[in-house]
Length: 132
Image 1 (cartoon, rainbow, N blue to C red):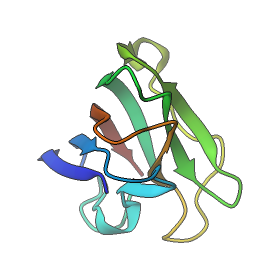
Image 2: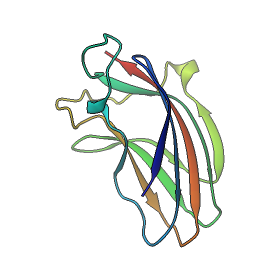
Image 3: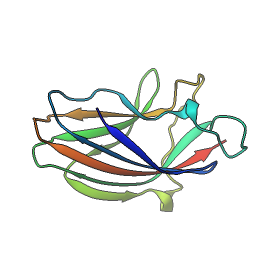
Image 4: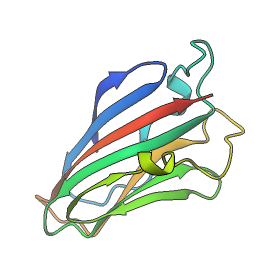
């Protein structure tokens, strides 16, 4: 299961490092950012949305894809990650879901892996802004 290390947790910014080394099977819809546990910019309520500002990632050669999504009834893909790379969405205002969460369990960021084998690994650094 993915290990999530919170590097920055404030009312506006949330930065995490997600790592994992394969043991037996692909991960499916693992919650890496739980919106209901966060406090938004107003300092009282959960954020209405989580905006993705930057993603930096590296994964072993044997791993096909790590997919990041916002968790809704029909999930919205944030990005399909392969190999190693960096995406900066800030020049475009960040990447936000098209839908608005209607419950505390919607709008989380989840991770799904495809094509892993024993010993494969990944590391993802995710920079987010919490929105009201």
